[in-house]
Amino acid sequence: ADAPPCSYEDIELADCVLISGANPAWAHPILFRRLEAARAAKPGHKLIVIDPRRTETAELADLHLQLRPGTDVALCHGLLHALIWQGLV
Image (cartoon, rainbow, N blue to C red; front, side, top):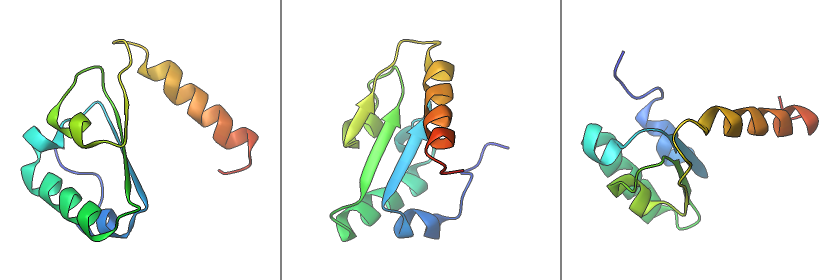
């Protein structure tokens, strides 16, 4: 289904939001406005965007990982390895 995979309230409660391969500023404007509001209300809120494109969503990010197309799987495997290695799963 083409829908956000969480509840909107999760965005407001999160300390960090990671968006991979999506541009909610264009595809999900209501979700994006809530993300902007959450960041304004919570100054420490972080946004990480993983996307080869320089999108409006990436412009808002604290960290934009502008990967080469096709390298996202390697990044996800590395992140999963770190999570397992550190006992965080």
